[in-house]
Length: 196
Image 1 (tube, rainbow, N blue to C red):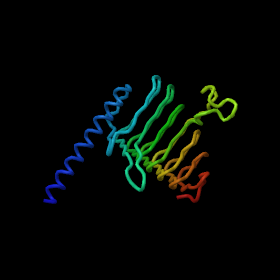
Image 2: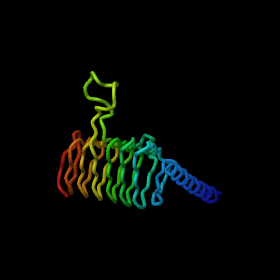
Image 3: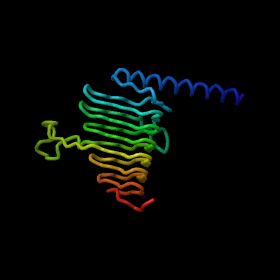
Image 4: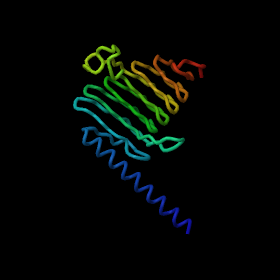
């Protein structure tokens, strides 16, 4: 009986994942985005792409809605007008929020852990007198994440950051300055621990 039940549960999960994949491609299509190389593994990411924005995917991209280690987080990609998100081939994301007002470029073979947030904007004016009055003075700066980078769970990647190829960002790090290639970096603020 257990084997039969396990067989049917496995089949149901497979059908659910196919449904999520179809739903995600439909959401992309509604936003005018062609993404034939995108695979969703578990759950359907939230997609918000405004008019004039760009979202470009390479091949074999996957998104997991993160269900584990104490919290549940859906992947979300939010691109405002005139912003552009580009993701290279063979990259994967677990419960990640990508919020773009300017430009976010993520290389190939990049893995990003659950609960990580990537923001290229301050979201509000830093001058308290102007907060809430206008979005014109909000500071943005492009983010560039190189190839073969691993970003651990629960990180924050801030505006204007460049993370070099093959680097590792430890879990819980807050990255507000550039990280060179071929190193392990950790902390708040994130800094190089050692070269690899």
